[in-house]
Amino acid sequence: MRPIKKIEHQNQRGVSLPRARATRAGSVRIIGGQWRRTPLVVPDIDGLRPTGDRVRETLFNWIRHFFVDLEDRTVLDLFAGSGALGFEAASQGAHRVVMFEKSGQAVAALKASQKKLKADMIEIRSGDSLLLTERLQESFDLIFLDPPFSLNMHEKVLTRALRVLKAGGMIYMESPKEMDITFLESLGLEIVRESATGNVAYRLLARKED
Image (cartoon, rainbow, N blue to C red; front, side):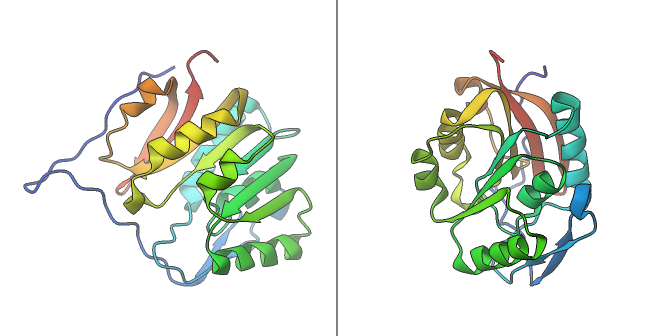
């Protein structure tokens, strides 16, 4: 297991969180599994950042290393957005995927993709991710966490996500590269895999006791 470390960048004006890259309406493609190459609609929503193909490929290679496969695994996507992560997990064999999304426009696109793919293993819930997580009565093997960077809410969301993470489960988190992540220590989390692209760092996390 790799120790937690702080990734930081300083300029003349000091450290600041980058704004999320705005994305215009378009599509991303599922990269593996039963729906490989299937496009997913990316709604024209300010700040929406679908996880790119290369990052998803790396992530799911990490996941296969620890889980072997996703069969019988349950997945929670806390800020679903375009659904790139959640649909990818379902395509690659996840038994159940629950997606949370606040934007009505994004929820409509997610439901349209779910209907097109006949993805019965996916459940889409509309609303605030923090409140929906607090109300959950089930736990998950894998949790995707990619909140809007501008809200600086990673620690708060992780705290709630840990309540519904199964023993031996893992959390995938995207964050600004220069964000101070030393709070992971106090939450009892360690980094088991990490990389970065552009101004975004992405990490796979696990409880220390697991």
